[in-house]
Length: 327
Image (cartoon, one colour):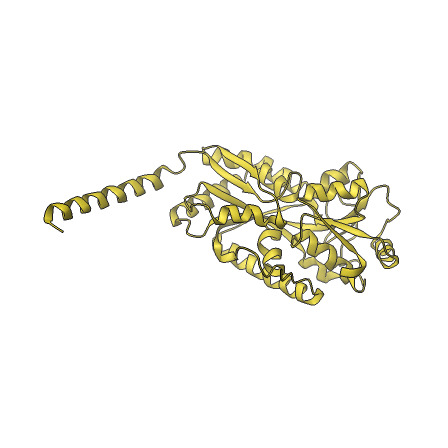
């Protein structure tokens, strides 16, 4: 290569680097696609859309909220996994999509290493509930009904947190051969799962308190139990520990934000700062706490450690129940 060509190549490289730096400095300069991997009305959707207003104000660019449902959160997660790691396609990751599904599904099309977490910001307990007009009034009633047969539970999909929770709770309360005795009804999201119980097509569901709070407040669903050491405000139901099952306290939900692996450090840092500001918004905190959620922001390192611990816990439960999905 001649000197002129070498100089031209060097000039192009400098210009390219300059454009890259400018692009990073100008981020964001267009709308950001925020993928919610579950349907409307579920815990993830509620959390994401409640955060969207204060987060959008901090970001300064439009946040396009998109529900990409299916496969227990995998469809939306894969959409972000395959996106360009430029910060313009981000995911509201959830316990089901990034702790339970990896623990349950041998052929899941992604691993935790395919994402870069910029923060977990919400933790909430699970609660089990039946329709308010059901004859089932306690967990003992539910267990007795399950042992007689004909009991079913709804979830947001095979391999979701609701799928694992329904089976695990029944197992912990002494229902033998739970996978054969209790019928699982997978749906596209937590909202549909709750509606199925309301409609009588499912007997019960175990989901996050945030997804149940409005139904409980409106006396449409009757909570039977919460998986916390202390009672949950607004839920007139005993705790798992008070019923003699403290191990169920490990059933806890969480919501976080992640981008594809390879998300640049400066963009990840910017997201951390945005989340720190947005999650301190008084209206956001009040709205989420009223639904039983705990707002606790974890930095990327804390987030990864927490999610890995969740994965290991749930993997042990999956192995115990024989719920590993190979196909």
